[in-house]
Length: 294
Image (cartoon, rainbow, N blue to C red; front, side):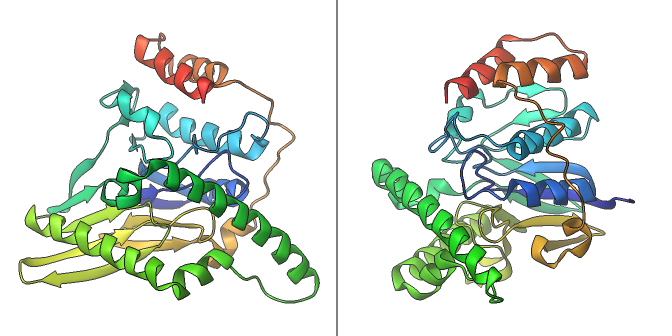
């Protein structure tokens, strides 16, 4: 199958290691494209809810596929989010074409693009971390229940429903939070003369022009792989939202889970180093140990 070429793909809020993660669907998407650069914009591995008892083969296959990009010397930028924040202490770490950074400023076709996860603008995250973690557990439980309900709903010939989307779209405080988040991000981006600002964190895919008295900016959010199954793509001079549910080509890709064996984080990193023909460094061992300890 010929892969679709994409200049840049931005992924966020995958939440590997949780029941809500749609790793199989993400893997199909990744296998359908040929990106020239990849930005992992936070919450890729969910350390908050990570359990060694739950790490399906498809979750490891996603990690290996991303490592494959590094082996092919495709630039991969990892911007940690709040759920994988332990990687923030490795800011500046390089491994082949992989770079860990807390934010990214790029110039694409003479346009300034600012990319970061976005949790820094979350008031709950900054002042009530225990409440945010509790909310994350509740959200994951809601997604799990939602999956079971949709299983029976489809068996009965009815369509899928999203509990979390209904909550976000009907609860005024949730809508207000999203609007406030977007306004704050855009104000700061305009102040710093950016043409585009790219975020994740709020699981709300979006591309829109925002104009204030100070100027204008294009706000973009890559969404998530829990409920929306979306990404941002830059190709042929245009940004667009990719939606897996509308991609019949990716949906038809077969995923062979039987070939996948069990590996620890250290074993995975060691095999990656071998593939890259590199010697382990202190930074490499630190990343491996941090993931292993999660």
